[in-house]
Length: 102
Image (cartoon, rainbow, N blue to C red; front, top):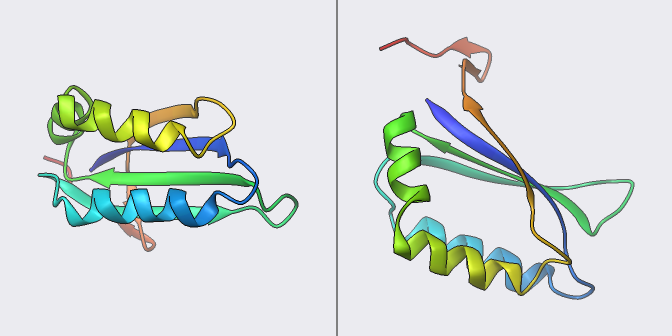
């Protein structure tokens, strides 16, 4: 599996709108999408991390390069104080179980 983790800061009062946008992403059934997780930080409720897992790097890159994802990304930016900080990489384990290599 492969994915990305975004670190971002939500504009005041915009959490519900951001979550609605992320639900739309889930409902779009983007090929290869496995899961989306959103973390709200205890120390600062406007700071969040968004983790998105894909079946493989190819599915991730296909989505990242698509015009539809570019549109979703720009819509999401309306609810953030600035662009997210992205961290992409291979998912080597989940739920304490190793991910099978290809």
